[in-house]
Amino acid sequence: MDDRFDRRELLLHLGDMLEALSCLTRTGRPDAKVVQLAGSQESLQDFEFLRALTPKMTVADFGARVATAFFLWPKELLETDLNREALASTVQHDLFGGDPSGWKAYVAHMQKKVSWFGTGLPAMKSGASGEPALAEAEYASPVVASVEAAPPTEWDAPDEKKGWPWPQPGSTS
Image (cartoon, rainbow, N blue to C red; front, top):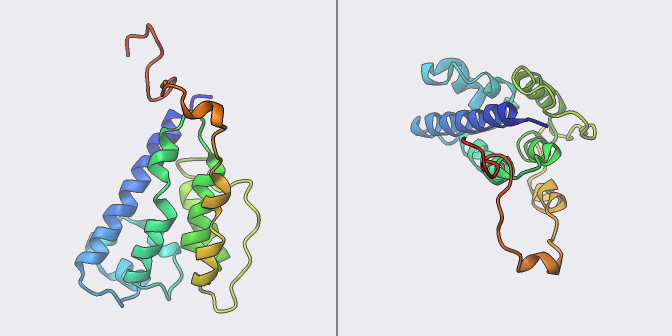
């Protein structure tokens, strides 16, 4: 399957997330609500996905959640086989845990560019307070479930790069 355009869109989105985080951090207001800043700061107007966040999320909380939700993306986007579930489930769990309506809005935004994003994941349960349970998130991250140990026979195998983004042998690209 040729998914290089989806990978490109996801990489661009990761960059947008980091840029939004940078803009939010530069406000110097870690306790400010992200949704309020997104509506009032000109530098944040282009980041539609910020409006999907729970209204209670602060800039400091957003920074911590973005770090845990997206840290796997660079590695996953370079793998030969794209793990679609791992890409979406970390964002669902770590950025939108306990906020199913925010998750639905975010998925709708993402599916404008990557049609499969967020499909096939279990339905989210709404948190009692509307906020994700941070202690629970530390112990039940889907990242742990998405990591598979390599069999011992593969440990000493040479690191051979095949397929995207590495060109096939004999190709001119």
